[in-house]
Length: 386
Length: 172
Image 1 (tube, rainbow over the protein chains, first blue to last red):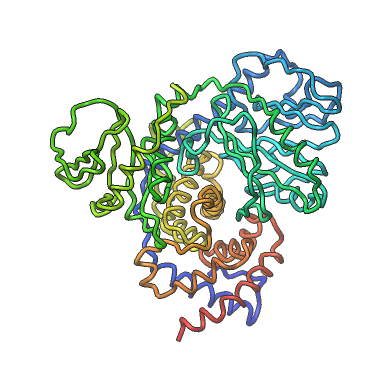
Image 2 (cartoon, one colour):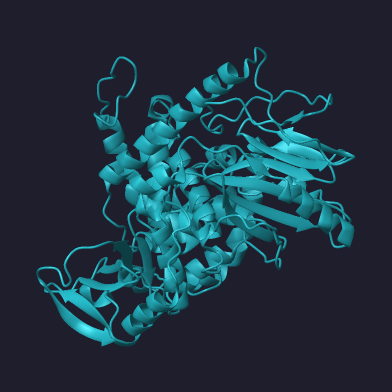
């Protein structure tokens, strides 16, 4: 026990007793084996990202010919000045060119451009603050926009700004994802539609209040927007928020989606297709490994030992050496390997692979396999980027 | 704990991961994982969050290595990562859904106890995890949570009330 001297008497004893009992119970929970290699690999990615961010700051300064310190979210296209704020440590994207010129703003509106090469237009009276007040690092909160004041603070959401949201006000913040990992599934981000639609609001643990969520991909970058309205927000304000979001203009990243797809399959259109297939088949989505999507049965226990991976390849002989036919679903043959760990079928010129993660019995069979094969035939594969 | 010799410019991973980090990782991994699991109730999330927290520690190792509160920092980072992971998975798996607890947890006969822990308000849950499960002093917990010691003690007192029935039941 910690032996806190500030505790005394009964409180102190109870404190010790509670700690001892809880730790005794917790010791019975089996921990997975440590995996130092994965930790090192992840640290390497974090370090590369940090270095890239540092280089990007220098590149932005050089490209824009700016002598003064970077100003985060300084409004563009107007004479309006805002206090300079240090650039977020891990934020800016590598910039190789001068930012694109912006058209004239709507009457009464202003453009804002941030160090992460994202521009947005808002009514001049709205407030805008950098996302550095939110504890999100990866993914990263880029900025917060609101009709009222925006006090900084919060872990995974701008909690203080949410608390200060006026009854007739609105608040939204933009988050950017980069570097596929357990908490970023690039295939969940569809290309940005011509017209953004807020859709219904839903509650999320981190936010506390019902919010509208937008996930989209634009200029090869991945964005999440959360939008909150006060209970008495008028319809005109909702329209203004949509118009503001509609004006979002990200500068393209130097790391194009095609490049990212060459490095990691989860950035490819095939991954987006597999994601739709597993949703159509009613499977549970666990996340991704970078080269595959992890799925499993949608049962109440959500047992991770029943996870399996899905990915695609093209071409090659069918069946491959060592594989034999295990089922035929609506005329499509599915093949299994001798080991009972892998399945494969070909549809729409794609080879769909399934591999059990921990135990062979996790491999989908019978009804689940049939659902998967049928879904893969029903959902057209659309290569929306190279 | 024996410290590895310092390299001139700090650690030079990934070619070389300092022995001291390896020792801390091996010594504290299970503790951080269990605390994160108790906090979030999801084995997969706890595992990923633990990995992420140690990766962040390794990335910052030159600054963290001398600090006596490394384990607290890693645990606190893992709890934040777990919250973020659960938030990302939210549309697919609400927190209220049954969680995939490994057999070992069931074997502890404490499923209800951990459910009570996870039902605590977030700040109370955080205080309980850091103070009772990771065994950090209140002062350190306060520092990690960014609040006063009195606030942590208040969180712990409220949490104890909520946990009393479960703990007394399990002690019999």
